[in-house]
Amino acid sequence: MPRIEAVFRRLCPNCHGEITAGRLSKGLPCSACLPEEPEQADPISIGEALQKLGKYGSYLELSYLERDFRDFSSYFEDKYGFAMSSAQRSWARRLLLLDSFSIVAPTGVGKTTLLMAYAAYRAEKDKWRVLYLVPTENLVAQTADRVSKIVGAGSCSASPMLMGSACSGSSGRQAEHGRPLASLPAVISPWQLGQSLLKTASILGTSSPPQLI
Ligand SMILES: [Zn+2]
Image 1 (tube, protein in one colour):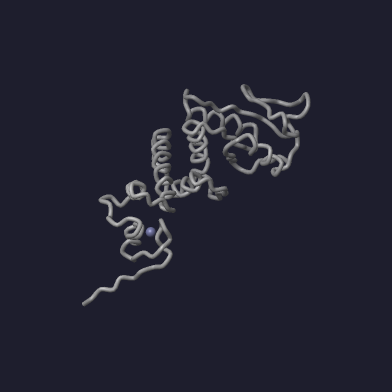
Image 2 (cartoon, protein in one colour):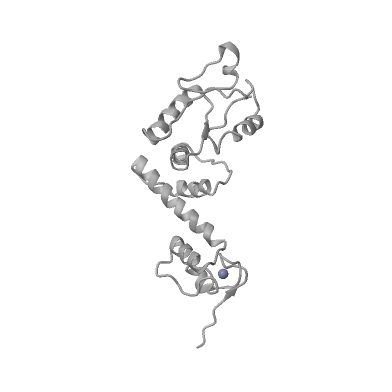
């Protein structure tokens, strides 16, 4: 009995052209993009095969993301001694895509653990300047201590800073080794804060909403 294979329009993950159901189920691009199926059908091998053929399409982003994800996963495991949970893996992919999003989950799920590892990863591996905002003085010291332990005695370090109304005038306080952001007003709105900080940092992470108004 002849077998009819379904063909889907605009669903090739690389060229957005037609693709068969068989190819889609294997996670492959269409046969026009990749005539021969690679031995290993993982995103990195497929991306390399597409590059060799000069078929630069949307699939390459997926391939690069997978490479970054594996790199970050091994960094996380190396630093903490355990692997990311499924929720953390899902958030890590969004972080690596540079998505701007908030994480809402119960205490103990691993939000802070993940964000600290990600901040350290970007600072250490990509030399990004990362600003990590926390709402209380205790958390500033605690976070700086934990991030410093993650990055170790490497090429970057965590510098705790205190700011907000407590930093104004002569009563202003600054944590040891901290540096004030001179251009910031003493009391600022989250919008002003974001605008000011984004000019100086590659990424901005927060743990709990900062209480700055
Ligand atoms: Zn295609």
